[in-house]
Amino acid sequence: MKAILSAVALASVGIVTTAVANADYKYGWLTGSLPGTDLVAANIVRDPAFVGAKGEQDQAMDQATNALNSDYCEKKGTSFIVDPKIVIFDKGIGEWMIGGICR
Image (cartoon, rainbow, N blue to C red; front, side):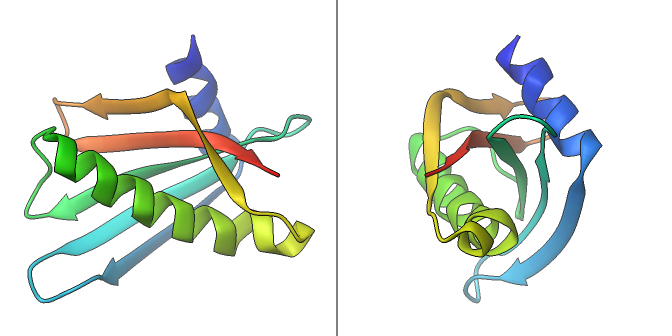
């Protein structure tokens, strides 16, 4: 259910961005919010692709936090707070979905 809410959030209002975090990795993301709720989320991809390791989750959460703060939370004078129930790795496409709220 949470994955569906996050997918709907990203489909509802989205912003796509790519950035180079260091010489080893290039990140891309799609952020979105679910209208009428406080839920915001980001789908994070990386080159080379994520494989689901714990350290990668931390990288994805850092990227999502920066992106969601910039795209949604800072405009409200708040900061992104991750909901651990909306931290999902999609092995099929090598993508982390990170969701939470601005508070």
